Image (spheres, rainbow, N blue to C red):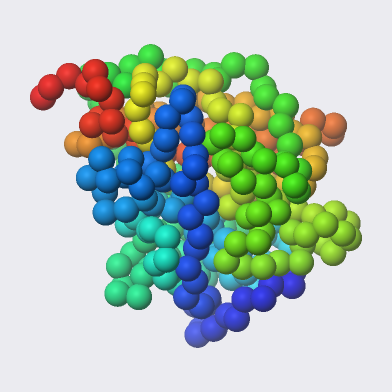
Amino acid sequence: MTFETPITIDGDTLTGPYRRPAQMLAGQEYAGHASVHDGDTATNLGLTGAPIEGPTLFSQFDPLAVEIWGQRWFEEGCVSSHFQTMVVGGEELQASLTRRSETAASIESHKPDGSSVLVGTATIGAADPTELDERRARPSADPGALHIIDQLSVGMSGGAPIDTAMEYDESNGLLYPFTLAEKLGKITEHGSWYVPGEHSPWGRPIIPTEMISVLALKGGTGFPVRGPSIGLFIDLQVRYVNGPVFVDNPYLVDHEVIGLGQGKRVESYWTESRLVDLDTGVHAATVLLHQGVFKDSYADYPAS
């Protein structure tokens, strides 16, 4: 991969430069209303600003992982993260990766003041536990009474698999109102394997890691979450099973609920989305997402 990213190597730790990820979801719309990425909506929820979409931060790790594992990263790599601090447009971030073994590393992203934005793991293959494997294995309390995601249940399917693809110049819909070309114009780490032409080892362009969840989720999941209500990403993992995931290639995506919970401000649920090549039947990638829904955003939420 020809990345334009300068990398500093200090022992087992690889560090990229500070970057300013772009906010591209200000116009996001779902269920007929704006999302948390809209400034006014974020303000109404008591946030300091409209957060950048979490997957955007994954691009800063791709050059670090490719430096170690080469093209295998896009074939069988896994980035697994827990988001800790909100990031708004214009803020600087720096990503680092520290090797723990031949197949596993820890990852971290922070702001110039040292505050951590995300922590997680980068792994190759399926042998090593990931950040979210470990978090999901911890004992969890019964979520108790739920009022926004009460219609969900563990094991619930999102319905029949959805036929989807990501073309270079086609909008990704109301949930992701930009094209891949527009994203690549603002992506923090430019790479030759992403652009049209035979630049990649596979002879065709691949989709950046930060856009795999977009491909998986742009058609919606079909789960009955009460609304209007506003959600946000808490944890996200993208695993290449038999990758890469290619531009302008048809995939079938299916969704399953694999966990429910709640905290002081949110009700939350875990979903697993699988991308299967429509033509070959090959399981290309899996997206594991833990998303919360703000209780304050749902007008019918019972008073405590």
